[in-house]
Every structure is written in C-alpha cells, then in structure tokens.
Length: 358
Image 1 (cartoon, rainbow, N blue to C red):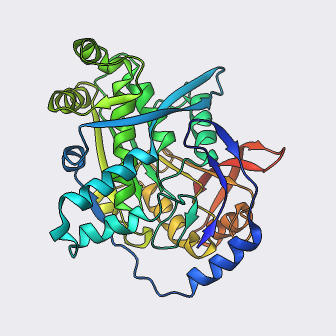
Image 2 (tube, helix red, strand yellow):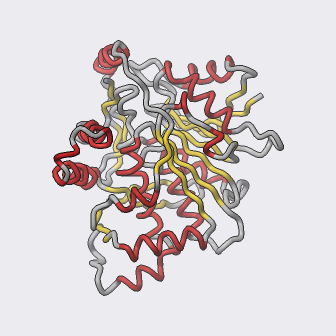
C-alpha cells in the first residue's frame, strides 16, 4: 500500500498535503510482493447502478478554476454517504456474504476510511478527487472553442470521481440542443468506484444543470433548497434517461485492468482520450500507454483525436512520473511523442500533456 496525500478534501475544501515518501516507498514494496490476480474487463449497467442507489444521496461542491476565467462548482457525492450505502447493502443481505459482489463490497468498504491509500490491483484511488483532474478540466475549458466535444467519442481512463468528464457533461447539458450524438465512456479499475461515486456524480451534475430545470421545478415543493441532498426517485431516473436521449448523450461504464480493456466491445477508437493521476506506478505504464494508443488508433482518420494526460511531474516513493511516462510512450511499439500543453511550476509541479502516436 502507498499513499500520495495529494488530494482535494471531501468536505469541499481543496488542499495539498505533504508527501509521505518513506511510507510510500515501504508500502509500495510490500504491495508489489503480493501476488494479486487483476480484475478483468467488465461492463456495468447504468440502470442497475441507479436502481442500487438509496432513496437519497448527499453531496458537496468541488470548485474548478476555469481557464476562461472564473470558477465552476461541480457536485460530488460525499464519501460518508457512499460508505453508508455499502454498509446498508451488507446489512440488508447477510446471507449473500459469500457472493463475489458482496465480497467486492466488503473490499471497497475498507478503503473509505483511508481513500488515499492505494493497493495495486486491489484499489487504485478512485474514491478521492485528485488535484490533476481539476487541472485537466480547466484545460478542457480553455480549448473548448477549438475542440467541440459534441458528436465525439470520449474515453476517460482511470476516471474515479471523473471531474474532467463531469465538466464535459456540464457543458453539454448547459448548451443548446444538438443533433450530434456524443458517446462518453468511463473506465476505472474498481467497479465499486463506478457504482458508488462515478455514476452518482453524473446524475448530480445533470440534476444541477440547465437540462434538469423542468424536473427541478416540478420537485420544488418537495425539496429543501438549502439541503445538499438529492432524492433518488423513479421520476428522477426517468427524467435523467430522457435528458440523455434529448441531448444525444450515450454513457457506458467499464471496470477491470488496462491489460484486459477490450476496444472491440467498447466500440473502437475515440476522438478524446483523458486520464489524470494514473502514471504514478511504473509497472502499469506499458498497459496504460497501450490502452491509450489503441483508443486513438482510427483506421480512417488518424488526425482526429486528442489524447490528454494530467499528472504530477514526480510521484515520490512510487517511481512513476512524467519522465518515466515519456520514455514509455517513446519505447512503445511504433512510439509516440509527448508535449506539455500546461504546467504549474510552483510548489508541487504538475502538467497536462498531449500525446501523439506515430
């Protein structure tokens, strides 16, 4: 197990902690020595995930500084709320304790108390909002006039709380209707992360957008406007699905290791590939680079893609970082080039990089 201590706090306040280098190095060595069978590629059902949510979820805002000026507050499900959902599910069905799904729930539950602690091929940090995801959302805001995501295929790799994709959805749901069909796919190692934070964050983003204005007005007499809670009703789920159809948004969710990611099942290449805070572990860099390359490999037009990686320059005590990632991209079959398109040099150095594949 190792720990970054770089994150966005879950009470809504953003902060940067110090790096526990010695603990990171020791825990990384311990985790690497253990034989772990990675989870395989699996698609999750959006409808099933929504049906498994409790009748009410709570959330807090996370603030993104926009490149175009100003700030954007996006909703993010509270971790204590997701934790309570897991506890309730286990208590409601004690006879299912030996089922794989319940075992996965118990495994997920242990990381809610320390969501920054990473165990390779067990839990990869998706419960936390890492600061480079905010950098990537801000960068997307800065290029939105040159790169219109509507009508595109988007893949966020290692999405976790999926702040960059939430920004994209916010823009779509706040824009005039379009005939374009937009496909946004979310990948995270842990299925529980997708079910407990990614999908709830998506429905929260929709609920607070212009697209849900009619629904919000219909619920005003039943809702507490001062409460940061959302009632999950059948009416809400129906309105959400209707908005997806109206705005031409198609969502899919995939869990499992990058080694097993199946581009044929996901529908082929993408126009926009996003990932943030995923280059921290050297052992996983070849798999990550291979998925990114495959996701950008269009047999018809190799120029129509944008591949963006947001990361810290160095992950102390773990071994990964920008230099290792650049070497991995260069050494991959046919190779590629990495260009820094945004950087922060004061304090902990962070970058957003654009990858072009040969």
